Length: 98
Image (cartoon, rainbow, N blue to C red; front, top):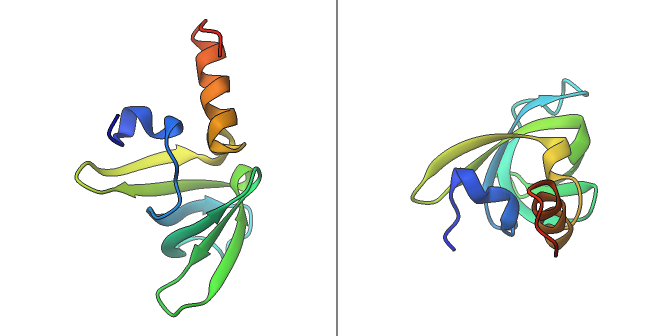
């Protein structure tokens, strides 16, 4: 399955370009870079200057740039959890068992 805006929660996010659209700390709003690591609660974003910043997923709204499909805006709480946990949560909500 290819990455697309409608199925982004099913995929690994490491390697995607990201921009912080909203965040509880205003100094983080507008930060752009590449997601280089992901934990259950955070992203580590590498900015163009090589510096890395850790942001909490649940505190923000993120624009993920999907190659060949364009950008998608996602609320951080939907990204909460590891990729395989997100898949389980989506399947449970849809009535499927994982």
